[in-house]
Image 1 (tube, rainbow, N blue to C red):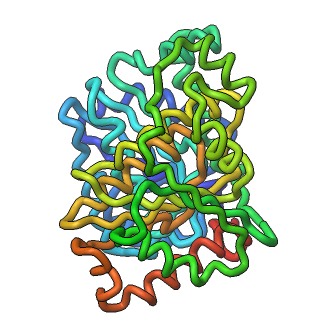
Image 2 (cartoon, helix red, strand yellow; image 1 turned 135 degrees about the vertical axis):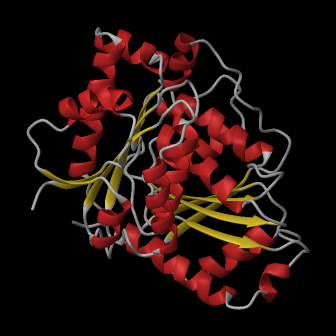
Length: 360
């Protein structure tokens, strides 16, 4: 048995896979692994409780047909990655699609039980311009920076360990009104089953939350070293300390036009200053999303790309609870909602107390 399983969907255009193969050769040197290249092999293999590296080559269209055959199986087999930990390398043949395909994959794999460490994605666009800064930092060319990132990802995936907190600290962040919010009503149902945790709730609903000013790097770094931000206010005074203190961040997010609300988006943008001097690899991310009509998956994917892929929060298996309700308190009338809320609370506790968080 190898160190991990490489899920590397077959690409018929072999000339377009040469760069990805070079990245894999550099990233996987010295490791032993089992490789899966077809959906048929995928379907026959038990991938629960494993370390998994997804490696996908995209053509100019952003489509890999074998990958989509695998994605279908992932979405239909909702426990196929139970207890597994994953990472993703995606290589593109255009400037587009690498991020959208990767967050769709991570969302779907997570719904089937896969946990992802902070920053689980290494992506290469056709030009590799997305590696300009890393190449400068490493003093190598962009392809060299790509290879370094791939090897670091594999190391992080293999070294991943679950949390084990006796009394976990949970920060719940929202920007809603309790009287009318289905999202907060759902959170209250979940919270009833989190009695073993120290829970802090912070509302950033008021209009005093300023979005990121996009300061120059040196300016942002200056404020970050004092755990501050240019604008100050409740984000710096209340939210920053709470994020640093928590073991898990629960984002309670109504679906506004298939997107996060403005204040929650502003919080994520303002978190950039804190990430300059702190990393959140040891903090879990959870999301509660209620949509009036549809699109909860889009909001969940925003949380993944912003807070897991970018801001370094780990993503436990089954990280999100997605429901549909429109009128105030309608969420309370949905059949089976209390059981799903209780089950989600158990998921939170398992991942924070080492009772099944991809523990390998």
